[in-house]
Image 1: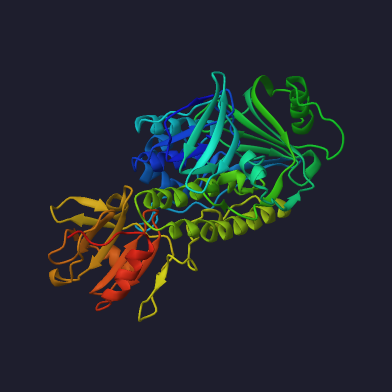
Image 2: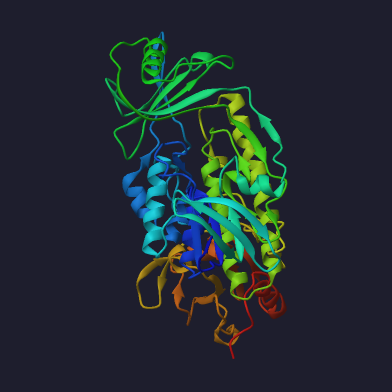
Amino acid sequence: MSTLASPSVLIAGAGAAGLTLAIDLARRNIPLRIIDKAEVPFSGSRGKGLQPRTQEVFEDLGVLDRIAARGGPYPMIRLHGPDGTHDVSMVEAGPATPAEPYGQPLMLPQGLTEGMLRERLAELGVTVEFATELAAFEDKGQVVEATLRSRAGSQSVQASYLVGADGGSSFVRKSLGIGFPGETLPVRAVVADLDLEGLARDVWHTWNAQDPPRTIGLCPLAGTELFQLQAALPLEGDFDISDAGLATMIAARTGRDDIRLRQVHWRSAFQPSTRLADRYRVGRIFLAGDSAHVHPPTGGQGLNTSIQDAYNLGWKLATVLDGAPQELLDTYEPERRPIAAGVLNLSTRLLRSREKRRGRESHELDLGYFESPLTLEVRDRSGRLPAGARAPDAPCRSAGGQPTRLFEVFRGPQATLLGYEVGSESSVKARRGLQIHQIGQGGDLKDDGGHIREAYDLEPGDWALVRPDGYIAAIIGPGRADALADALSRVGLPAPLR
């Protein structure tokens, strides 16, 4: 058995969660390896919706523009019935606002999204090791010893941390003996990516919407020339999902003989489950994504929740590896597990109600870490924006005269401290991992339109501390140097540089 150089973090699973975590660590110069037992990357559509909050995450990671260039908005749903057709909106789409730059979900097949994440990861000097399986692991206290198996044989690896992002049937979770309670839902379905002719691509076609056993949908997949088929299957017995079987289903359920199936690119028959891991961490080993929670596909929540697991965990692992107290890692589970529980409830409710329209609650912009030990609520007045909430965007201007946005200011792996009209005598000393910006007279940012003041509900002398993952750790009024020091310490920032 060969022994290779030890990474700081070993990631098992190269889906959306694993790739997001790898990108976040790589841009922080954390040595890592990311492996996947699959021979080749996943190429199907499966999780095709990217919610507004995920788009914000991808902007920070430097991958959103290429994803948006390939993807597109969700089309209207055309309900075909015996009395004709009518169109309904699938998503609640709002205009971009100064505080929320992305008003609606973006559609791109999961396989294409993951391909662009791999491209971004390669730009940061890391490639996924496919056909490489995590065969065994053990937490030794100071390191995790892992055995990897590939065509080249077995390898022994020592890593500071192991992250299981290896899906709903997670080897990591099962090996740790972590419970995965929940239920398998009384629904069975098939999803497939099809090359079709005879069907317009401007809408998402649905037949038999009020007859669940015979429901079928054909959605044009943005970024491709394909359609995604979604159809109910009988709960009992076998069902033919071969090319011929799917062609027969399409003809029978649509009542049309002019839709011709040319090729099936990917297919999957499944019975959705709703499950949540009892724990997200055991020692130096963590779960992220589907290894920690599995969802029905309704509402487009599973992929997005997985990506945000990784975005939460990445900066904490990096900060601890850079010398911060281990207690910072204790906050991962209490922050992310309640989010997953709420999302599971939403996905299941949408599935059972058969409601077509997806509202703001699916955008994930209103989720936050209000009860987190990292959150410090110390305002002497009642503010509209509580600590723990997502940090809003806002247009502003640099002192040099160039237009910019807070999201551009935040971009990168560091925390950000915003001082609103604090005056030069209130300056905070520099420290590693923190960028400090002052807004107003004598500051490096100008709030000409009042967007920052409005979004953050700031008054002169206030400080707003924004975590590396874009959530507000604290908003602190003037004369509270002790509270500001406490907030900086909670998010793992070191003492000021001398």
